[in-house]
Length: 87
Image 1 (tube, helix red, strand yellow):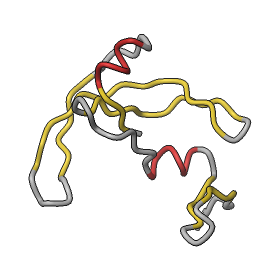
Image 2 (cartoon, one colour; image 1 turned 30 degrees about the vertical axis):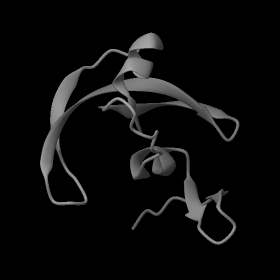
Image 3 (cartoon, one colour; image 1 turned 90 degrees about the horizontal axis):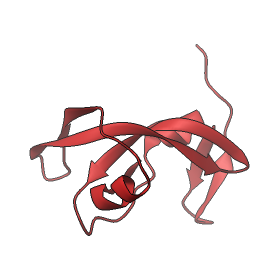
């Protein structure tokens, strides 16, 4: 999950470390990351949070979706429950 850093600071989320990320345009950038409680689909879990740039749109990422057991239905534009995969 990525959110603007100033919003996370107002919510009291503290960065724990900095990590490299590769962007869609193939640039590598470093962002601070932390953990926060997220409430979604009737559940509350800790998940990794990326401190994004000011003005960046919040982004629900694959890690958070997987933690919550959710997938994306792109046709209906909604989140749907998906079973975990253990193979």
